[in-house]
Image 1 (cartoon, rainbow, N blue to C red):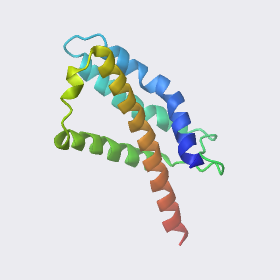
Image 2: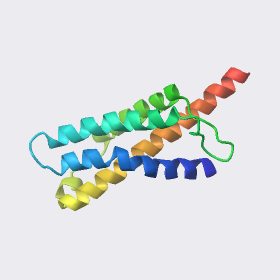
Image 3: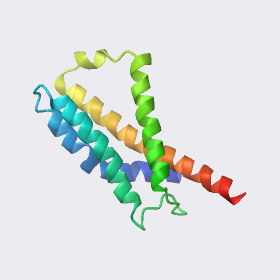
Length: 135
């Protein structure tokens, strides 16, 4: 449980770098602003955590377990594919009925959850790989 709280806390601080740029691009509201916001978010949500995980002080939880960069990339891809797939299953038309501020808040929450889930899935994959390699 402490690992999850640690991941959520560090994701919060990384989100200042990951979320503000796409949110600023989206609030411009010209024709291509949504595409610019999406691409900048995808790039930043991949590169900022990778840069953090490259640090020697990037451990999570009381035992300071680290997440391998490849495990994070795999977790990031799985979360992005899961999010993409959810558009085929769910009906998100209610988002467009919200005022602009409501949509912005919804997108910020989704972006935060995606980064936190990517780190969590990467952590789980990393632990599974380590267990299988020690047997």
